[in-house]
Amino acid sequence: MKEQFKMIQFVVILGIVAAGILIGSQGYTMDLITENQEYTLKSTILNAFEIDFTEATVLDVYEKSVRKEVKDDTVLYYSEDGTVGFEINGKGLWGPIDGFMTLEPDLVTIKAIQIIYNEETPGLGGVIAEQWYLNKFKGKKFSPAIAIIKSADMSSETEIDSISGATMTSNAFELMLNENYQNQKEVLNQ
Image (cartoon, rainbow, N blue to C red; front, side, top):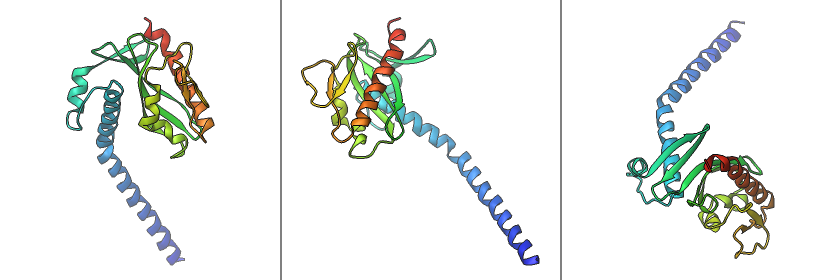
């Protein structure tokens, strides 16, 4: 009986010590995590605005080149050339997709798309985050909507090739882009 009590006592003490270490680690790293998230967002925004920067100059270049504005609870970002950007998010096949999209001053033409986070299968649906694929969206227009389809007409202003072997991710990405644009459209035109 005493041995069982000692074992339970040891497990409880070990649990308390482990919990203390985890809580202490979280408190110690919370500021670093927040700084890294801010760096990731700001560098993604600069990439989407196609503004040059280095790892050491991200914060300074961002402060000088990007203006953040809140309209009707919507956060919009503007560059000096009239480009506007906003965060995009939606559901992919396997989980959330988060990113950032910029539009030319006409508010219809895509300047760039950057993906910050996704849970799609690497090499298949994960292609949505690869720069070579995202570059296909440059110059495409939301008029009336983007279409990600098999054997797209590359001369079309609205069509982009779907990802081979990732039809459901392509469909989810198309829906996400069009929904995010439609949700921002009214605020953008104010």
